[in-house]
Length: 389
Image 1 (cartoon, rainbow, N blue to C red):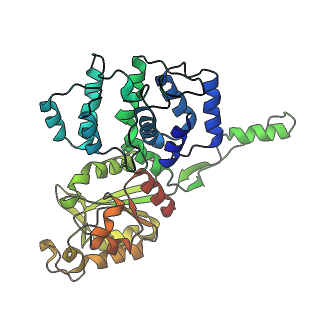
Image 2 (image 1 turned 60 degrees about the vertical axis):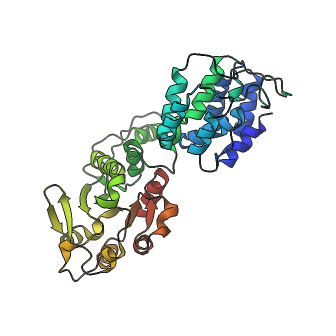
Image 3 (image 1 turned 120 degrees about the horizontal axis):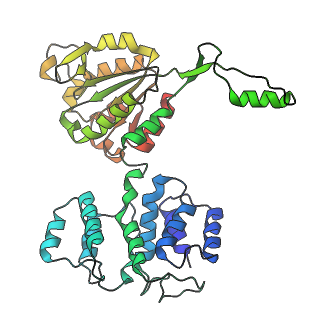
């Protein structure tokens, strides 16, 4: 009876194994779900989902199976939500004015407002609990076919379970979405090369226990050398213009790297649209350093991460006088990027634009031909770190 949930999870690429699925069935047979859909939600999620990045996909699969929603290919769309709100069986009583106001919101605002309305509502839902699939045609419902004899209470907790799934609180944990500071920090911590340093003073507890055991209990202290990360990181970020919509994520990346206190050395510079003759250390005061000096000083010793959409106007990349401030330059933007690529063998370009849109711009593939380019997402940063190592 629960196979549709299994197939929905697999369709959304949640890695559910047969062992985990059998564990869920065993838990159900022992009544661990307490005949409650809310408890079943948490039981199944804890047994079937081993990584928080799949929580959002689990919520979508759960909503599909217990609320009869269409299984999304790329998540819930705004149009799907609006159509559902206008259906005769729905959890909210909305006036035409309310519906018109909701239509003006973007998807994230709409989901947030919907969640608030559902939480504030105290009156019974129209259509009872059939909204969540515990009645009617749902194969999991109290009134539907139930050959396994497993039932769910049709109490208010069922509504909470569906609200939990439909609200999609965990969509920011998906690996294909942009990062928060904590996720950036976790990803950057993988960028390390540990080397012994200093004198042999710290006690190596594990080695001491092992050697003591080998000596039949005679204590033999083992001291080890301290280890430090030898990675030097250079972060160069595009600022202003087309990067304004991505300013927050760029700031998060800088903040996470700056606060990490993890690298042997960390430096940050800025540019606008394309890297030219100068790199800025302070955009507000126009403090800058010659690009040639940066290449000479940091060169092959540093890993380089560039953050930018690479979606500049073609003349800004390919012409000598791409911008007014460098009208007398004899080096094009693409030539500067080529020099940087040759100077930094371990480099990566993080692009905040959706990966499927890169080919829509003439300049992005040109830059991508010189730099390994990754989307500025959890998965993209993880791949970039592997490349840098």
